[in-house]
Image 1: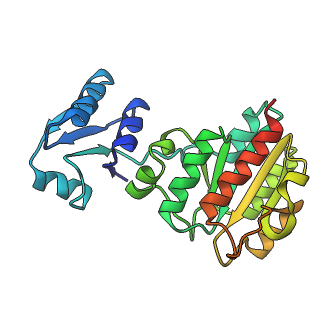
Image 2 (image 1 turned 120 degrees about the vertical axis):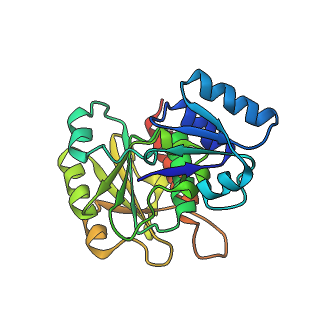
Length: 242
């Protein structure tokens, strides 16, 4: 499956990550485009000059800003398996994020951006009824999708069970939970976040060791899932990192 990326930072990070089979197409000049061309050449990525119409055809829209990076496949680490991750896991203070039913690619991209900042060890998303890698995800993540290890799991309930068998405590984000700051999130921790509205599916919720929440004093019902994920990642790492 091929992919096309147009956001400047997403293209920059994809080039830096050494994306195999990538080609940078450009139709205009300018400082930023010249920087991308130089970076591409230094990383052995082919650069081709094209007209605007060709760029639009490659990326599927008009807002390309004069460049597009095409890839043989999306930069999302679907080649990882949960078994491989668990077999190679050595760190005691580990953080895994599980997204249940997050279908908006902007939200997935934003979660990946936070996951990169907080050095999340693994992001798990389901095969069905969920957002997967596309250009929107890559752009929303500002290139973080090139760095965040991802497992696409056939069954999140089973994945949570495997994590627990390897010493992880699994916490579900829910308004009925205990404030996250009052819960010990050190050690091997997995955080589950559900879709806005539906929340975490019942069977997956039953796998949780406990439910946690973000303590607030506002008037609206809840955070956007990507915002909630970032806050909970921060709290987990605040406790885990010296």
